[in-house]
Length: 266
Image 1 (cartoon, helix red, strand yellow):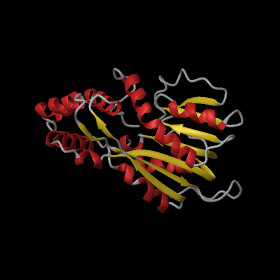
Image 2: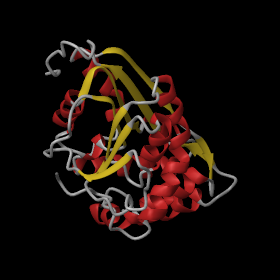
Image 3: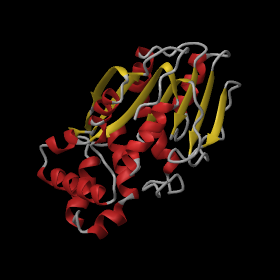
Image 4: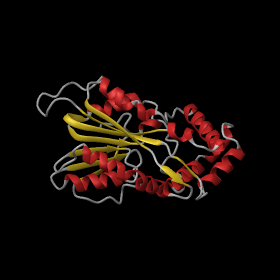
């Protein structure tokens, strides 16, 4: 797997992941409940980060179920303790994922992975017939609707830099069509964004993320120093409101039942 642009080894990564979990977990838990997560399910989460979603899943599936919580770097997963939760180091681009899961889940992973189409196929193949695949990925179109010309310039520069790095911050809209074309059924995609004020939880998460990337963004020349400084001030301004990027949660069911499993999607 190519180097992750925000590896778990960077300063304040624990805090950044905690803010992300507090911001996104409620909407994902709602979608997982809609998908029918129930006692006894076998689940796999890849790119689990700090494990907050896997911890919740372990509570839902109960003692008769099992959750594999995985990441390429498991340093923030070591504190997870539950008899039905197993932590594994998995590089989703090449390592075995297992098979016959009732649920396979990933959040905010595919946009960073150049082999994202192949990885999506691998995730799909790990779902048992009749099981569910849930993929939550960003789509940054709302950030360009900001009323601030400075912040719009910042986001345009950031997105240009991201594209040069092989990151697809519009991948959220692409998952549902790909799964539908591969034969998955009951495909649904729900996008949620947040209108937030400076110093709020989303503002703190975005500011912390962008400060981790400050050197790369400024050295690229795609974000100017003045634009950078003014945008960071807006993230810290309680009177300023703007749009966060959208997170698109796609749910899909693999056709068939436990008997007579069809071939994985191609």
